[in-house]
Structure formats: structure tokens, C-alpha cells
Image 1 (cartoon, rainbow, N blue to C red):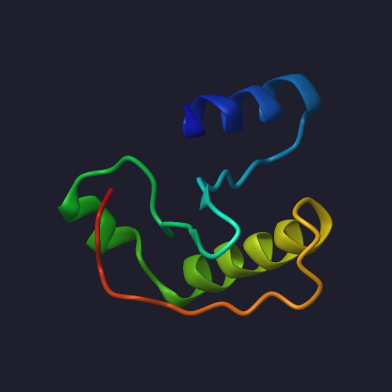
Image 2: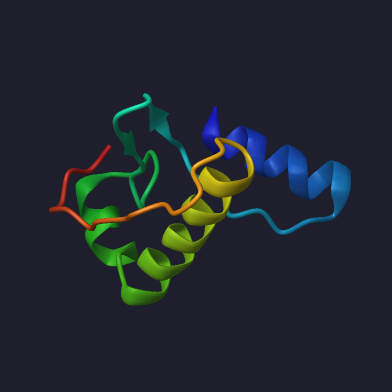
Length: 81
């Protein structure tokens, strides 16, 4: 559904979307940098720009949508979804 929602945003609003998928609880939010791709594709796609862009989206949404005043982000290991 993540990619589908991104396509809808682009189609309906003309916005080039960078959809992210967040698994959230009050204690922890987990956001994979890559979404629904093979391990091989995840390795090919993963780069500094993707990690930074995803982190910026997550930090903004944690502040604006979840009320987290000062989000703290950490980058973990490779776990393709």
C-alpha cells in the first residue's frame, strides 16, 4: 500500500511523492529506508541521499503529525522489507 499511496499523491495532487512506511508506538517508531523491494534492489537503492531524505521526512512527520517536539533518529542495519 505504501507505493500505491505515493502513486495516488502524484496522480491526484501532482506531487512527486517519497512515500515512507512507519511502524509506530509511543516508545519507538521504525521506518525502513527502502520499501517493498528485493534484497538485491535494496542494496542497489540504498545510499546517503535516500537515508537523509527519509530521515528528514520522518523527523518532520514525528514533529507535525505525532507531536514529538524533538525527534531523535538512529540508523540501524540492513533489514530489507
